[in-house]
Amino acid sequence: MIVKKSQAEIERMARSGLVLAATHDLLRESAKAGVSTGELDRIAERFIRDQGGVPTFKGYRGFPGSICASPNEMIVHGIPGDYRLKGGDIISLDVGVTLGGWVSDAAVTLAIGEIDADRERLLAVTEASLLAGVAQAVAGNRMGDISSAVQHVCEEGGLSVVRSLVGHGVGREMHEDPQVPNYGRPGRGVRLEEGMVLAIEPMTTLGGPGVHVGDDGWAIYAQDDSPTAHFEFTVAITAEGPRILTPWHIPAAEREGAAAASAS
Image (cartoon, rainbow, N blue to C red; front, top):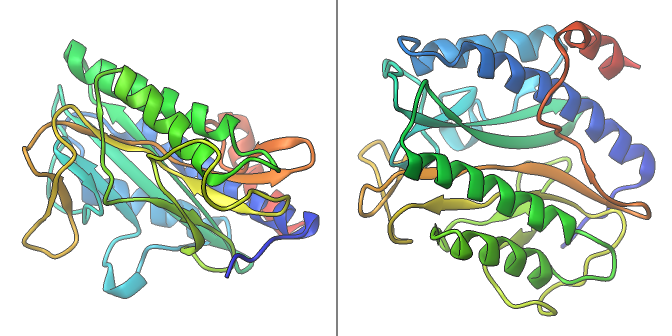
């Protein structure tokens, strides 16, 4: 069942998204060669809790981390640990924040130092596909309009869409109805309505679309070990159009104000 949110509830989700965006900024600054994914996890958890939030992922179905940290050929669900970033890596950092009972969810894939041209294209095209999908998150459209927009940008850019992984609704729970595929046909699927809040999250590879699960039962890799990318926003469908609740950046001067904003 799709649970639509009131304007007041969307504002509460936006406060959660503010904390999440500030967390991503800290991670972006911290994700350097030599830093371990476990260190990034601790940075994120400490900041989220300092703002009065809870890392949504921690303990979810037994997941041990506060964030998902997925380097290179790992698409999603990487458990933070001893892996140390090195120049030329790319890493997907997926973060969830629960604040006042409301969840926000967003991911970004970062370059560590200089990366090759193919990986630059992978990141640029995947990010562009997310923005194309968000632009279709308009009341009166259908889910297929989002899905097909993502797919078109990815495939025109020479990438494969991972079809076995999808976005989802967000609200009181991290995973709510409806599912948000990254491929499809325009004009098909669930009709979009004001008050829906969606996690739109293209996941792509430079190779084929197949995946396999790692030995830990969590990490999902490209089947052919090709480089992968993952970008995600939490987006509310409003009368004024799509509203991104988890923006890319929060200026450093505003980070300490996240707690005050989330408490208001």
